[in-house]
Image 1 (cartoon, rainbow, N blue to C red):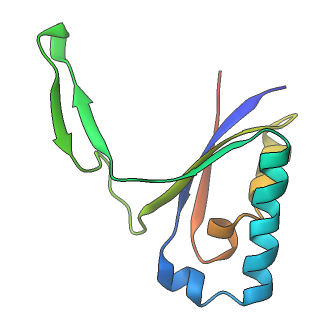
Image 2 (image 1 turned 180 degrees about the vertical axis):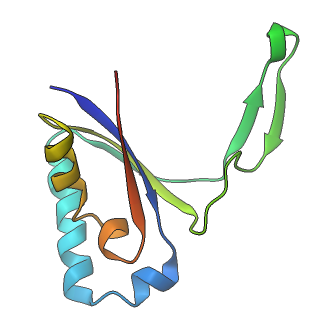
Amino acid sequence: MPKFVTIQYGDRAGYDRTPQPVRDAAHEQDARLRSEGALIGRAGMPVQVRNPAASGVETRDGAFMSSELPIAGFAVIEAADLTEAIDKISQVPCAVAHGVVEVWPLG
C-alpha cells in the first residue's frame, strides 16, 4: 500500500479555540491511524545538516523553511491513494484546529 508523509502545522492558540468535542474526535483519529501502523510524532527543535561536496558536516540550529504556523508534528501513513490519505488526515488535530497538514506521497 502506498505511503504518505504528512507535515502538520499548528499552534496552541488555534488548538485552544477549537471546541473540545472536535479536539477529542481528532485525537481519536490519531489513535486510529496509529492502530493502522502510522508513525506519528510531535515535532522537536530542528537542526539543519549540510555536507557540501562531502567536505565536512555543517549544522545550524533552526528550521530551513519558515511558515506562518510552526511545525507541530509528522506522520507516515498508508493509504490506497492520495484521496484516501487526504480523507484520513483531514480529521487529525492540526487539520481541525485552525492549522494545516501537508500530504506528500512517498515514491
